[in-house]
Image (tube, rainbow, N blue to C red):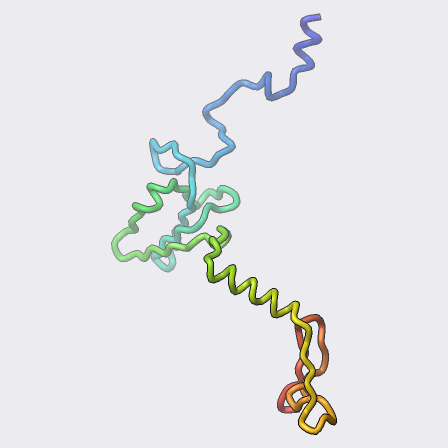
Length: 145
């Protein structure tokens, strides 16, 4: 009966812990065990070292670096270092951003104004160029046509 209990154990409980394989990518620098945050790629044809956000997957000709080693990175003499910023990180909105968003929502919710031209016999001249409308968006005819 002891064998039956052992066979019901999942692979995680019976797996042997290993220091060799880790789900977290580590810094490529020797003797550094910190987590990688950036990927370094050398472009030999342009004499350029490109340091960017951590690549989606590890590649053999790229080097993953921790925060400390990526900040202290220097390139060989005559080479250029290009540091790419991580565009995927969400920027924190400022008070001005939130106010602009609120104003845009208020403007979109405002009913359209349709004043008539002097004399009351039709729409304004500016509205005559309007071809279509969908919500707060307008399709305008080109001034050339």
